[in-house]
Image: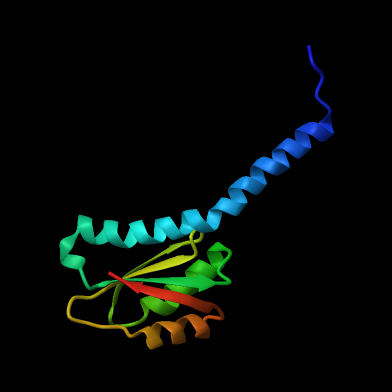
Length: 121
């Protein structure tokens, strides 16, 4: 039976984790694209009412809940869903109402985070 040193096992684990970590941005980008399209495909009535915002600095559930509260208080917002994994906020707007990119950026900044981008579907 071949013996494996603890260092070999550790190095193998580090390499595997590094490969996943390096692939994460590409996977998150794919998820962002699919998510907006999937929402509208599943519920055509939501077309034009789905807004996704990528947020920099959102790392914990407290961060997510803070942003959810701030955005959820807006009259135009029907619901807010936040993914810590992809750093995306998905906002569903009330029918016939609008929320500008500037209003979203202001709310994100007020909560202490930075807006990286907005996608509308």
